[in-house]
Every structure is written in C-alpha cells, then in structure tokens.
Amino acid sequence: MLDEAKGLFDRLKKSRLFDVNYVCYLKSLINMIGAFPYELSIDRVIETNDLWLVSLIDAYYEVARDDADYDQVGIAVCKFHLCGNLEELIYRWVEDVCKGRPSSQVRKDHLSARENNHFKMVCESIVEYEKEYFVKREALLNTFDLTIGQSPVQLFSEGQDSEALKCAVAQYKTGNLISDNNMAFLVRYLKYDPEEEFGMSRFKFIQKLLKRGVASRESYSVMNYALALLEEGRTEEAGHLIDELEDVDIQMITDTFWYPEMWQKRKTPEGALVCLIAQKRGDKVYAEQADMMECILENQPQWARLI
Image (cartoon, rainbow, N blue to C red):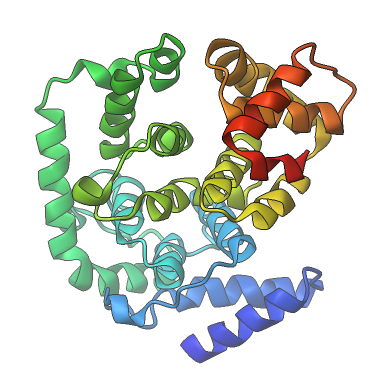
C-alpha cells in the first residue's frame, strides 16, 4: 500500500488533471491508507513536500466531518503517514474523532464498518499519546492567562511586540490553528528562536506554521513564507511564490497590513518591498516609492531583483 502511494505521488507531480474514475480511485486510496500500517511509528512516515496533495487530503478530511462515505479516521492517519505531524494527528483524534473525550468512552458503531474498524485499530496505538494530550490540555485549562483572550495582531499594531509574541505562543499551545499565520509572522519578524520550546529551527517552525495556508494559497501565508525564503537567501524561489499570487490579493494584503503596519509605522525593508511589488503589479502609486527603494537598497539590496 505504501509503495502504491509513492507511485501515486509521482503521477501527481506529472499532471493536475484527473478523470472521474481516477478521482474516485484517489478518494478510495486516501480512505484506505490510513490503516496500513496503523502503528504510529515515525519510521513508517512518507515525507512529502507536495502541498497540492496535502491540501487535497485536508479537503477530504473537512468533508468527512459530515459525509459517511469518507473515513475520517483513515484520512487523519493518512495525513500523519504523509507528513509525520503527530501533534496535528492527536489534536484531530481527540477533538474531532472523539469529540473531546477519551477514546475508551467513544463508540463508532453507528458509522461504516470500515471506519469503525479503523477506529479500533488506531485506538491501540494512540492511547499513550492521547493520555499525554489530555494532561497537557487540563494543565492549560487550569492556568489563568490573560493573553489567551488577547489578539497578537492588535498587540503588535500597538507596538507591544514581546506581548504579541507571548500571546501568539499561548494561543498556539491551546491548539488554536487559526493563529498559525500570526505566530509565523512574529517568529520570523521578531527573530524568535523556537528551538528550546518547540524543538525546531526557526525556518522549519515557520514552514510548519504556514504549511496549511501556503497549500491553500492564502495570500497572507504565501507572502509571509516568501519573506521567510528571502531571509534564507532563496530569492528566486520567493519570487516564484509571489508571482503565483493574484494582483488583487497582493494589493489587499498591502493595503491592510504591509503598508500601514510595516511601512507607515515601522519603515521596514519588507514593508517597502511588498508595497513596491504591489505597485508594480497594480495601478496604485505610492508617494513614498523613492524612500521605499532607498530603504531596500540600504538594508536588503538583493531584494531589488523582485521589483
């Protein structure tokens, strides 16, 4: 089954057009692969950077919430086999599959025989990880932290950078995936080192946070990741990623964030860059364009290739 999946990756890289029969075959394979093998062993993970495929599986997972024809358990474990993100799997297992309860208290008899069998198989391998998740969740619920109810974006806008980062980290630890893009931005811009707390290099952590957003071509995530690539010296790759954004999306993220926050307030090179890219791709002309270019040339001259 894993060899068949690897062969599928090769076919996906060659074409993005599928006939109806092939789409049905793909759906069936995603449903099944989650249980073979079902042991949660990291050496059985197939690592893939195919964001299109990962995005497709995520889409199937969302549909599976309300569609009995899709095996939610199988799809969740399939995603783990492809990406090795155990944290995401345990979150989905507890909060979605088990509805926030221990699996020992959950019955899946009302679902298809396939999904019920997958549920029973996975239970045996996941029980220790599940217990650890509940311990951490209980600890978070018993910790009174005012940052949970605050907005990292608002704090950053007010110039409270350290508080914004603290707030984003707190929200991330609660499993709030919505804040991943904000967290990635703050990790990148504030040069936060996640190695000690999260066991990853800064760039790898940013990649993880932005993976879902980039896969779905969410404009803030794409630009955020492109800027991370630029900081890694991967200018050509960043340029290709920015080129994939629609002109209207670039103007929107510039008007709402990179111009008012990153240029007007802070006069940053990245604010200048995004504004000049938006100007190049649209009809808007910035009165400060000369100052923007000077800022780039003084601080990040290699970025001028993108303008």
